[in-house]
Image (cartoon, rainbow, N blue to C red; front, top):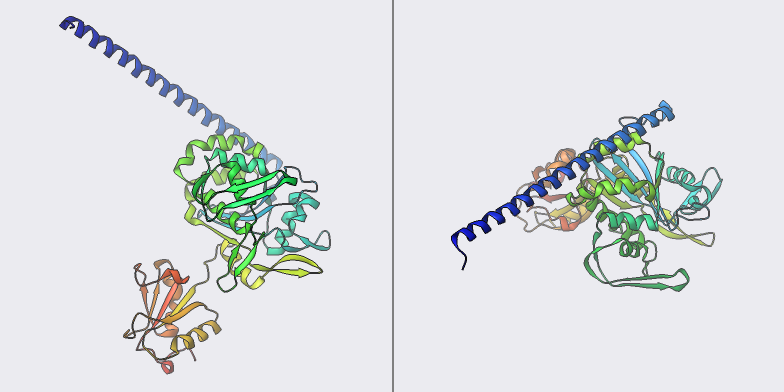
Length: 425
């Protein structure tokens, strides 16, 4: 048994060891802080130097307009070279650094385009093989009538490295994916379920082709697409969500430092710095994605993806030009008169409204005609309300059924009279 003196000595020794550990931890914290500050200073100095050099080398006429969106063509290939290599993934990314909004349009690689400088029709992915990023930008600009000056190009290895630096990307795989191509030394095998994919597994996910092939219009009425392009679009959404999450912040220095070996781009430092400074404005919920509307057709004996111009216009207006998405209407009969919902829907469609569904309301005792809409769209339905003599109710999360795919619900009430309305049925 220890004497009181020995117990006291051991307590003092233990306290000394604890104090040494606390001093060591404080020194570590101070050292790491100094290293971090030095790193930030060096990054700022490097950015400032590169920015000044870019101003010296770039004509003033190349400076982007303050009120214009930044349009970037993303190109993914299996190799870093451009000679005889076709683009496997093509996406137009449109960014508004003032609002933090962004649009991403996935362009199927078999899309048929007219190449002005070559004076011929071809698939969009072939433009990269024939003229690199410059010809690809020219073709996409001509197809969509959108000015594109910048590109970002990476290959399979760069894609895997980006995903690994971010710590993987979470994806819910709907069904087992298995594909083997011994000629390409390619084996894809992914199991279903919610999981975090590392770089190698993520590459398998975006490369996998099922029976739908690269792209297919699986629901013409709902404008739903399936196939590899659709999976690439969904993966991009998950990648953006991970990139803008708080868990990614500690990984950004490594991602930034290695970006120049991972991607090839002509983005000037002035744009890179502008996007960095505006980083706090961006969030995953401000990023909209879509597939270029169209369908597969045979032209001169070859299969192409033919863009549907009418359906593409509102998508481009929203994703590229930042205009509000067209309102989608649901018309419900709330007064019991047979066929009224259909009659009103037909008139609204003739007036240019997009009616996506119709039916009966929960009962036929609605005394007044109502338009149920979210707060951010309330102002946009004022003309519609005047046409129908309806009251506008801001959505409280209960009245509107978003499962119907609409953004506005119209309930025709007992006060509705065709003779007293500006709409003519």
